[in-house]
Length: 194
Image 1: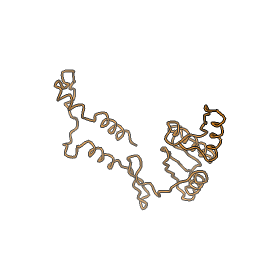
Image 2 (image 1 turned 30 degrees about the vertical axis):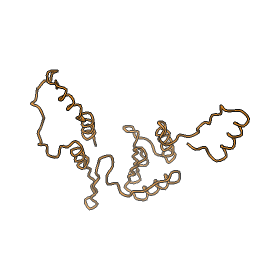
Image 3 (image 1 turned 135 degrees about the vertical axis):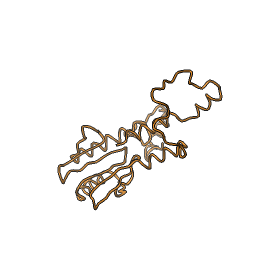
Image 4 (image 1 turned 90 degrees about the horizontal axis):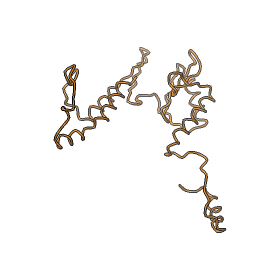
């Protein structure tokens, strides 16, 4: 970390006078520190509330404002946002309100976020979501492109016991090389996706 201009001179002066126990107090969180994400969240939430957005009861990362045609929904994921409304002018005003305080980058209509692909059909006035791309990435990541589908890998009712564990060092090493937790975590995220 570099000291701000002007502070270096003060510290040099203090050292010259024999004071070597000077400490600088950081008044704001730095990107990358473990508390930085909390500070960012508090900052953006405060700004959204100043724009009259309220957090949803079911999800504290979803904020709403207005009703009917003027309703606007803002979804937060760290520093990514989705803004939805029936009215383009409402979306534009929310973007402008956020841009007053933060530097933003408008990526246009959302197509893919958090493993979910978004498909719009303006003629039929529908919106569809799919996790096909995320599912395919899991299959590729774990080398299952040629796996044969089955309803369950074991017969229903099979009870696994300690005798089913690998016994040789070679078999144990082979099992340790399997990314079991990562695979289960990926599948759980896929299964719980909305």
